[in-house]
Every structure is written in structure tokens, then in C-alpha cells.
Image (cartoon, rainbow, N blue to C red; front, side, top):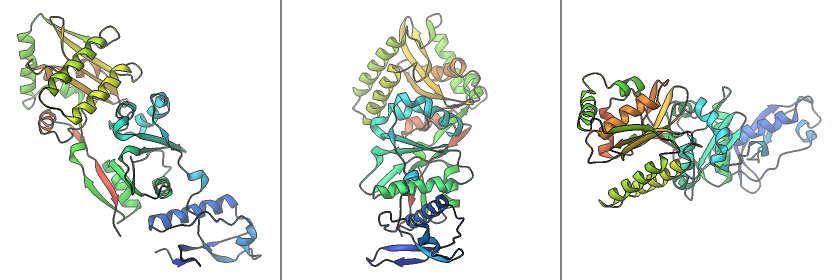
Length: 385
């Protein structure tokens, strides 16, 4: 338990004992003070403005081994401040190496999502050492500042970098909240800050990860219905089917198909989620090459009936981001899933087909393909004292 006290104005502070020597490095003292300040922040204290002692004599008090209690009244150290910048497509060469190495094959750590869904999340990033921080600015509210789990090389001390987020939230007079952390980061929080966080699993945002081999072959009894639908498609439209890689010559066909697809869906009733998704898809198609998408478009007698596209998350995992087909074409979705795996995922071991967002029909469809594993997500909130 950190010993507490109050100054003359009634502001609480913690007391910290440290053995000072004439050889003590001033940077070390500042670092220690930053650590103490982070302890204050975790205890929810109000910390006054920075009032660090600059004169070493105030530390040593002319006694080279004097043990003193330091009144900590500083919260933010300038070198620990996080300078967030809005995520932009021009940042991809900075961000993608972090995503590929540390993103854990999750679609939420991807440049396409952070740019295409910027209106939803308002993602901003900052980098300190070899650690990437993401602030989801559009999810903030009056009292809470929301972040993704930081990723990178924590150098064995993840708490040091999480403390920076405590400081950043406090700087904005807000509580720290984590959006959709995975099991690994959940365990880090539980070990680093025992009894500080409460967690809630968010099943709607769990990601479905499949073996590429399963989707490209569709073997076994469990996937027999999918295999039969693909066969039925080719039997029905034999000689009239053409599948092409999406490229500069046919991407306008894909765009027109997407436009018609969303218009047909909205005839059944407006759906805000689909509208937001459609805006993201238009962005992806407009920046298809820059975002390094790979995809297929399916024609029957020269007319587009469906398309699928995705991006590489890392050396092992491909992410199928988009899959759209005509409802009146039996087997089109099974065909798109199968052919995307065959054509676009060579050399990959896994395919991430993302979340179901709580849509019942989508959940049944994704579960029916028998995922190899799920990337579960949790919200993490500081417990009320």
C-alpha cells in the first residue's frame, strides 16, 4: 500500500523513500518520480501540476546518504507524453510493420480498418520506443478515454507502457478504458494490475480464424454441404462462369456491383451497420492497390454476380475483408469463400473471416465453416472504488 499524505492545500500525495547519493543520476531521479506518479494515477488521486525539484541540494540536503521522503506532486513527464496523430493512409509504412509483427492475426490491427472505419473509431496513433499506442477518439465520452491494447516490444515491462496510457487519460481528465483486448493482453492486465480491472467478453467481436486448407478443399462431413453448393453452382452455370483477379481493368465492374448490391439491400429497409460498411468498402475499392488488397470477381455470362477481397495480416494469415454476392444465385457465397482461399491465399496457413457483429444469420454462417480458433475480445474497465 502506498503511504498517503496531504499538502497544505489539502491535495493528496504519496510518500516514497529513496536512498540518494551524490552520484545519483538526475535522469534516474526523474524516472523514479514518473514511476511514483503513475502509482498515484492508478490510485485515482488528484495530482497537482509539476513541481519537480531541480536543485540536487534539495535532494541531498548536504548528506550524501540521507534517506528522505519525497513529496510527489508531478503527474506528467514530458518524455512520457503521448503525442497522438490521426491515422492516415500515408502512415501505412510506419504502422504495418507493427501490425504484422505484433497484431496477433487480428483484423483490428490493420491499416485498412483504421482508415476505412475512421468515421466510426477516429483512430489516432503514437509511438514510444518500439511500442504502438492507438487511441479510439470517437469512442471517448465525457469521462472516459478509450484505447486499443498497445502492441510492440515491451522489453519485459508492459506495465511501464500501460502507465503511459494512465497518464494520458489523466491528462485529459478521463478514466482509462480498453476497447476489445485479446486474451493475451487481458492476462497482462490481470497480472500487472491485480483487482484493478473488470473484464467483459464481447462475443459479437470475436474473430473467426480458419485453416486455409479447410476452406480451399472443403473436405470432410462437416463441410460437405458447402462442397455440394459449390458443385451445384458449377453444374448450373457450366460454361458461363468466369473468375478473374480484381485489377485495374475490372475494378469499376466491382464498384458498380457493390453500388447495386447496397441499393437492393436498402429496398428491404435501411441498416446503419450496412451503410457504414458500404462507405468503408467504397474507400477500400478507391484505394485498392495502395491498401494491397487481393481479390476475385465472378462473372456469369459477362455479368458480375459476386466478389471477395482481403489483405495480408502477416506471413501466416490472410484476412477476407469483403464477400458480396447476389442473393438469387444459389451457391455464390460458398463459391466465393472457396475460390478466395484457392486463388488469393496461396502460401498462407490461416484465413481470418472477421467478426459476426452479433448478426444471427452471419454467426450461423461463420460457425458452419468450423473455425480452427476464435480470437476472443474483452472490454476492460477500471473497477469502481
